[in-house]
Image (cartoon, rainbow, N blue to C red):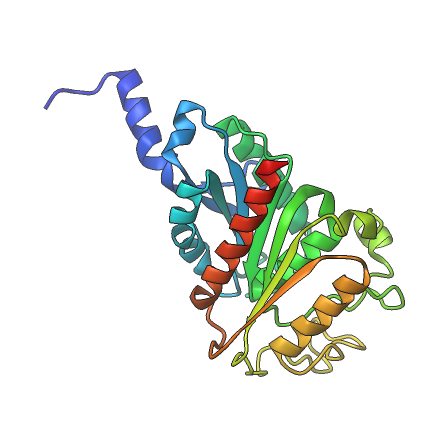
Length: 284
């Protein structure tokens, strides 16, 4: 077998690991955190792409599900898919939910995602100053809170079945409300920016189990008002939709018949929403 020359080997490795369904990469800004992508091979020839950031749930395995589940969408819509991976127990404590609330120990997960996007934009020579974000379950937690903190970064947000929601309530502190976000995160809430973001919310109408989402006194994320948005995921997402609409946000709400807490069974609604937003965005 003929040995590959250096240039040929580099090109072949890039084709295998950097395009299509990629390898898992460590974040340069925080190598404890990782990401996996789908990058249409056309990007190697300089084709310009939009970006969707798809955020996993508590089990983390949905990062691969989303990378693969959106691959065909990305190929035919000129859209790369970036899936962050935030490992369970990053501080050796077995904690699963820190990323959902944006901060854990010395980590600001929102800022890390912004850094990941910038890193990959440079790698693939793309302009991803704005991107879309989708998340389901724990990723739905992350997505709507990211939208509240960084609406200027988003051209769309799709929020799937979060277990708990942050309402735009200026009388309650984070995470139930937004009263203290400027002192906590260094940014004020800017409703006029959030109102520019097309927002999609999706949940199955049979997504009714409450064992994982009911906050109880003594729990790490328990606080007054933690359960006030509703008892089930559909109720809580409906409360979030109303809160966003009251702030002037255009919300598309999909309540999918017969679907329980199943991320794969809502992807068609997410893709339809994103395809429409992309079409409208590119026609401007």
